[in-house]
Length: 249
Image (cartoon, rainbow, N blue to C red):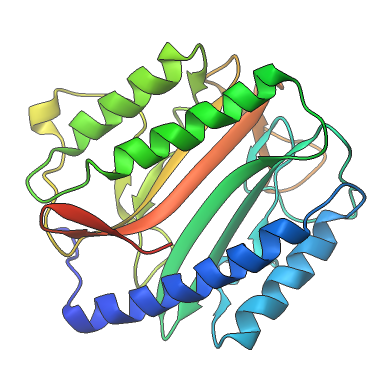
């Protein structure tokens, strides 16, 4: 059975999302060439704590940081380091908040300094696809319809879904069931039927030229595109509310 949130639980998740939105709105404009990802992580944690939340990602066993901060070919789960951001890098800012025991999650990928038009197009495709897909999350819709839409949009742009990396349910835990795939793996009628009260982290993770991942040998946790082409992630947490989603983050 899929876990449906009560009104009281949803209120806590809305507050968690409110904290996370405020943090992102302050944090993202401060990120610049010359910073280290450790510096970004420290800022993020201070902003969360100041607002009465705590770092969601630190609830994952063995993960010691507030954020995941992948650069270029790094796709997800890359921990902060002393690596210095350079002109032309793309950076994914992935961050979660837990408030009174309830989690929300968010990610975006940004370009630093001057990047070619091809990189701008790559990022724009993921961001626009997420915004369109979110509108499809309503009670009575099949997840497969949305998964197929995401796959068509990303591959139609000439890019590749990283199929082993997916969106997920969220609430009392950072990662709950169900998985929200970015591609259609089975007939649509056999995929999950969305219901009001479900809370989900919709997460589009893709690369320029491969659908395969690899684990970065030099850095624990970090997952990269297998061919080291640029990777990006766009994610928002939502609650299903009848005919429309409530955007939590």
